[in-house]
Length: 110
Length: 113
Image (cartoon, rainbow over all chains, first blue to last red; front, side):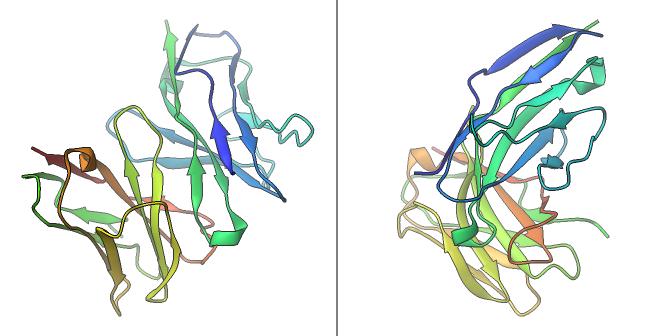
């Protein structure tokens, strides 16, 4: 079964510290992985996708098929990074269906 | 463009009642998907419609149904409401079937009492 696991419900770091939000997945075939972010009182929005291999707001994520992971990283956390982060997997067999993890709340303290 | 708009924003219903939630996609987007987000969990896929046809259905009972209109707006209907249906219902639109560039609405908060 396809599944996305985010082991940490809450991650608390100090400003300027490195951040790594973990995401592991189970999927048969070639998955497409995403990170979505939801800032306080805002809509869920796409942060980045593995296919584009880009860095958004200083965040990067590398798909590791051997470890079935797609961890989100940022070298120096900022207070404005505080938000809810969701890892998601797209199921090619069902159009645009996204399978989300439970989410990790990132809190960046001053 | 107002983005993806959902109505109503909040709703309180009694067990056993029926509810209809509405979604207007971004202009030009032909795909609409519905997700249920229970407190403390990630969104869970309910339906996807593309060009007015159902293209995907999640693991939800038949009490849940949806449709897409010629203008690509969509409705989600839930019959015989249960307490466990209390959740935030999200709508997402995309220009493609595969969902690149999904844009989410703010959601409808449904409370069943």
